[in-house]
Amino acid sequence: MARSASRSRSGAAQTRHSQAAALIGQRIVAGEWAVGMALPTEADLSRELDVSRASLREAIKLLAGKGLLSSTPRRGTIVQPHANWNRLDVDVLVWQTSGGATKSFVKDLFELRRMIEPEAAALAALRATPEQRAAIAETFEAMANAEDIQLSIDADLAFHRAIVRATNNVLLAAFQPAIEASLAVSFKVSRAGNVLLPYTVPMHRAVAEPILAGDADGARKAMLALLDRSETDAESAAVEDKN
Image (cartoon, rainbow, N blue to C red; front, side):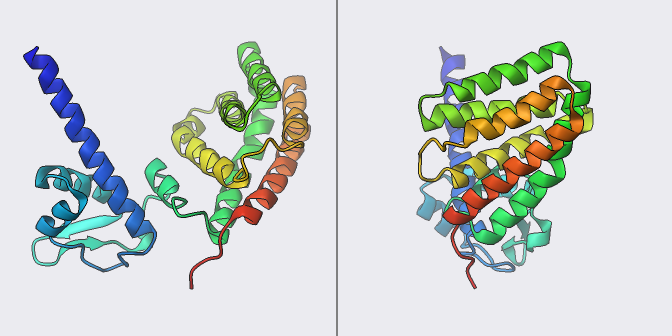
């Protein structure tokens, strides 16, 4: 019982510092605390966020690891330049859209996707094992049969995940968390209306079929067309950049 209680307290503490990190991180990314600015004192910030000083210190360490903050004895905790931020960190990606994705963020996001996904689709067409082709087919069928927007998004994410895995490129697989986070953010923005878009299934079928047929060039072109359409949807839902 004592061990169970200890684990429970440890889990609660971890949740508290993670929650505090998210609250601080969102405010930094939103520009509430500008680059070079010092955060409030530890006492003030722990009181404002309703967390212990120990949890706050852990939150600061977490954000420092993502490149958002640095702490020095004389200056306190300082917001770091944007160039220091780990933009591919899953949390940082998500925080950038917590107040709505900006048009410049959407542009950057889809430029990144175009650098990765069309070639991933082409490699999958050439390299996928029978099991991996089956996974791509199954995730596409799940998307085609999805009855609501969340099921469609879940299946869509699984479909793109299956394609990246089917490249059998171990270095690309190392980027999987960042790729998935960028996809999740992209889906959140492009499907902000919470409706099943009529062209989603046909355009994904156009990607799946050449991959399953071993047609690398066809898979590449179909993925590019899918990204073009998705970016148009995301841009229409994006907010204007702040001056």
